[in-house]
Amino acid sequence: MNISRKWDSISQIELMGFLSIPMARKVFKGEAKLTMDVAQFLSEQSILGNLKAIWFHTANEISRNDNSSYGMKLRMQGKLRGTPDFSFLWDGGSAFIELKSTKGRLSPHQETFRKWCKEMNVPYAIVNDLNQLFPLLHEWGVL
Image (cartoon, rainbow, N blue to C red; front, side, top):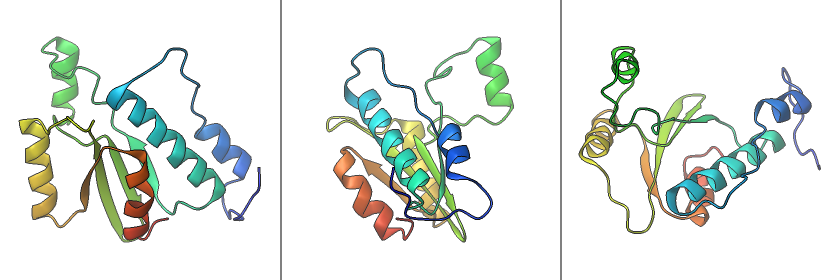
């Protein structure tokens, strides 16, 4: 692997271990595949030092409409319905990306979160193709 950036307080090996993404054992389609492709891209760009942001995937799939005691506990601890798939934090900024298939639409909770971001002047984007990611991150100044 060609190293294009020297890290100051974290080694590339340490970052590789932290961001390692397991290979899928079955074929995924739609938003699940897009999410995995985005995570792989972000991981690679982070390890190379090209992505100047901390990022993470929000595990929305956990207790999506779960009214069990576990789902209720998560909501009581602050889990918000409609949070976007990926969150980004960088020096002086933050942003969110929601992934949707080409036919996908925002749920009412996702629409509320999007409006909240607009009110707070926090960038929010809907991405339905991996090719949209590079220009978007470049526009935000983090790639």
